[in-house]
Amino acid sequence: MPELESDIPEVARVARDLIRFDTSNYGGGRAEGEREAAQYIGAYLEALGLEVEYYEPIPRRTNVMARVPGRDRSLPALVVHGHLDVVPAMAEDWTVDPFAGVVQDGMLWG
Image (cartoon, rainbow, N blue to C red):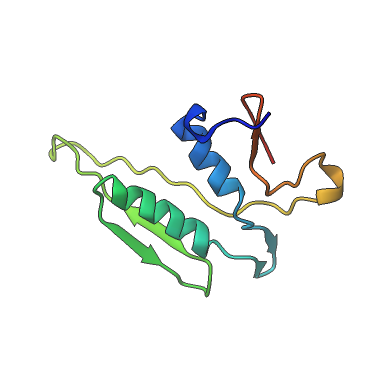
């Protein structure tokens, strides 16, 4: 039986939603691109009240940035960095669609 949306913790919902974006990067300049995933993250951060900036040095290879001001500006900054692209998934090797983001029995699949 599928989980109810309200039963899924926020962190699992965000992970599920991000898995559903095919951001496969095949190397050598061949990539699906991260634009939609970056826009999703940007909208999430904006809903938290943060100002978001987007950078797209290569078409569809979008980066998103937001600044969270610290409480003590005399201290050094902390940078948290991640990436939205993934290695290609061979669907035939999976029991579920690798980009389905299925939540079942409390587990996140694909």
